[in-house]
Length: 192
Image 1 (cartoon, rainbow, N blue to C red):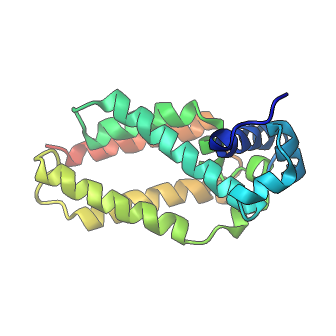
Image 2 (tube, rainbow, N blue to C red):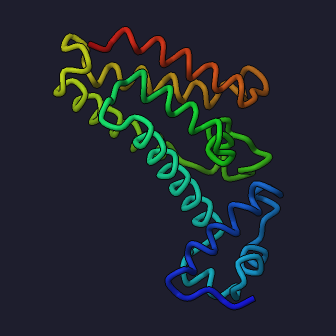
């Protein structure tokens, strides 16, 4: 198999890593296995990523971007909070890596689940506030709702879903989908 061109190396690494992580789990996936599966040398992986954890972080960022692009495409110009949640549910349901991330699935994400800091959630929370302000400015969200308070409620609900797996027992993708759909119905009360 020919080695990927330099421009394609990062994508090849991420494609190989995603397949291996989904098949065998993060803990059982080695950098050497990723390199071999991508058809490159192990050293080439380290030219793109400092560590195995950095590869998974990049995979999760890529999956988030993939999910966001799908939601944006489905929503088009008719953006609503409840519509975004409903589209996100469909996108999430179809993406095993994102489902694993939201379920804190140790079988797939392994030890990385407990190693991630709170910054992972804070960044998302700030983006939600920004988006809610935009919806309010567009007249799509009730003016009497404080975007920061709603963002805190939504972020708390999402984080609650993340910890539900550990606190309430194993959740499956269907339960997660149902919970997110229920949230979509709840937030429709805040829309104009």
